[in-house]
Length: 302
Image (cartoon, rainbow, N blue to C red):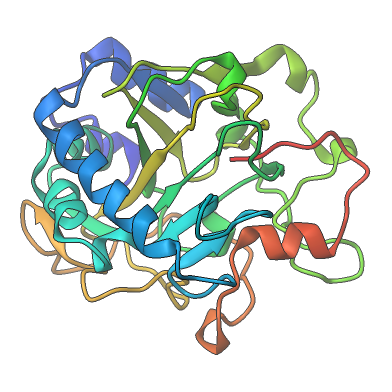
């Protein structure tokens, strides 16, 4: 669904001002949306997954490990597709207020695409440069939105999501380098003019939701604190927005309509989108690409 059609529907959770801000800036933090009941359930499920990772010795399709991970001191970068590994994560992705927030920016008919639980361990968290998301999983329009839940308080020291306000309105940058390698990174000389002035650090208390337009440039820094920063990320789109490449984090839930009705025809945005590598041959995750092809630009990590 295109933006002008979304705006024909009244928001359910967001105020009209908040929704206008999201469409104008491409990013927004909504404080205190998710209640303690959900947070308790999600933290319990997260703890179970961390415990299961103790037996893992190298990164696989489920766990992406941080350097130093071991049985006695588990350190994770990501739990890939948490909805596939614990029922609580799918319950949340399909039944919580996060779905209603997705409807406020996608339109009344909402479809689930994929999920991930990104960690930043205390005094850790691998860097992740500035990038845009949609080039990794293009759709027929730009309605897809990533909504992150801060499961614990996240302050400036913990490496919060950081976005460049208004960058979603500019032409998409390439996620390939000059040698044709997929790097999921934007070099500093290709960043928007005066981008430092438009940078916003998306801190939030536990239960806050951080919204990212699929075109907005974003990243984050290392976790310099003594506290872990778990960030649960779910990606939704309008039901009439159709992915036209392989879903890198596909699960049985991909394409499920979690609110409203299934679409009978597709929505199309006239702006094109760069194509990613063929993920059907295997997806190694963003850190592998960025660590293989090093950058001279200022580093970030999501």
